[in-house]
Image (cartoon, rainbow, N blue to C red; front, side, top):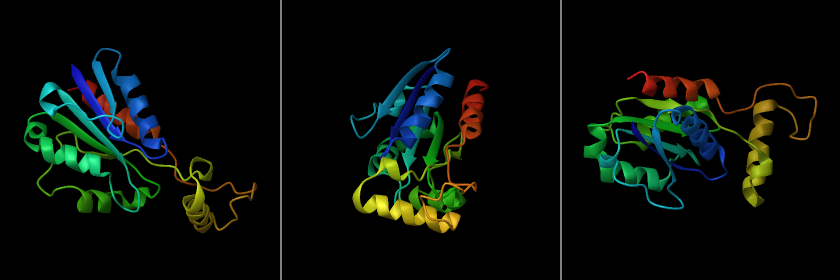
Length: 170
């Protein structure tokens, strides 16, 4: 099976999820792993399965992902297709899907949330201050507080594995 995994990633979380998915699927499939910020993804018509991934920044998916879906909407309707999002606020996942994708675009393999990360060490400048503030608001502790043991957003490997199993079992 020929599979396209096309994604955009700002700070590496979506790229990491795409890589994990590619590794799981690559055992018996031909995988094209494409960072759409570096190069354009080929037409969906060339593949048996198309998986599209985006980070969510400021409650928006990337322009490249939106453009790819718009340009390939007809071909995607005839393919095994999935969309995954990486976001720091997984509770908002359904809202992101409802507001960021065309209402008539229904990927056959569905929409998936692979979690996300809020890691200040991956960002700079004003963004770093924003991430620290968000982390503090979630934890109720200063970012530097080493005693915090609560839950912050993270990648959810089980969701990646569920999507790969769904693809392999079709």
